[in-house]
Amino acid sequence: MAGFDKASRVFIAGHRGLVGSAIHRALIAAGHRNIITRTRAELDLCDGAAVDEFFTAEKPEYVFLAAAKVGGIQANNTQPAAFIHDNLAIQINVIDAAWRHDAEKLLFLGSSCIYPKLAPQPIREEYLLTGELEPTNEAYAIAKIAGLKMCEAYRRQHGFNAIAVMPTNIYGPGDNFDLETGHVLPALIRKAHEAKVSGAAEMAVWGTGNPRREFLHVDDLADATLFCMSRYDDSIALNVGVGDDVTIRELVETVCDVVGFQGALAFDTSKPDGTPRKWLDVGRLAALGWRAKIGLRDGIASTYEWYLEQGGALAAE
Ligand code: GDP
Image: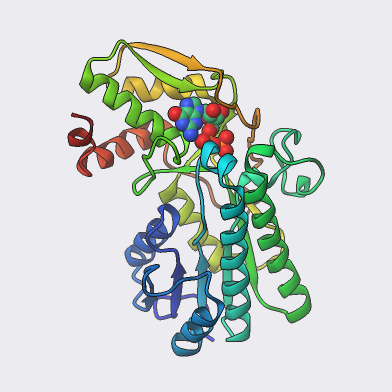
């Protein structure tokens, strides 16, 4: 085998999503010629027989498993059955089929919310499963932990080269700007934009503003996944982050500054704060030679531009 190169048959599961679409862009930019994709209408990853048929026909050599049911604090909190079911089903079908059909390697996307709610900060990879999870996203976290453990188990029992990365909070072009189901950063961009356009005196922010979050631009994450696909072959799921975090209050202030909304902030403490902090220790990946490049303010500005290009301005008027 030539290894992971431009001619490899690469399947991106979930290429329409935030992370999958960024991996798709990064592979194209790197000159990959054999990228395999399927929309959800073409291939339902929750359907084991369909996934098996797909792997039989296409025989991908490298698999980026970026397909997942994802959402913000409210979606996770209110649809736990869908979050645990869909994520487990996708992982079981894709990881198992990749191994059975002799893929060279699979990269699985975990998430920083799988660490214990009160993990020491910054969070090192070895803190996994050392304490209780944050209840608002426990169903998602349990499914993702099962995915990591599947990768480990298939490596141990079958020698299958399955690796995993654990990104911190991701944002960027392709994000979900829905206020009910999306994550905080796109929600705040949209709220600030709509408040500016409508001339509102204030905008609502959920929770106290005190929780701290780390934000990684999705193009940086995509770059890290390509890096790991080429150079990382171990069972420890690697943290991927930027190395520092901000409070939600600091985040909203930066968003308002970028968007140009100068009104007041109304913190709605009837909404949950979620975990107080999830700041990743990124020393392991840094030691291998990878670092994030996109700063938060620049990333917010380019994401806001993308939102406007998608008709965000029209939607708000
Ligand atoms: P989490 O990282 O899993 O907690 O998910 P989110 O990205 O949805 O929320 C992160 C933090 O931002 C939580 O403390 C939320 O209460 C807070 N937050 C503030 N305003 C908003 C908002 O408009 N939408 C969302 N989703 N979260 C918000």
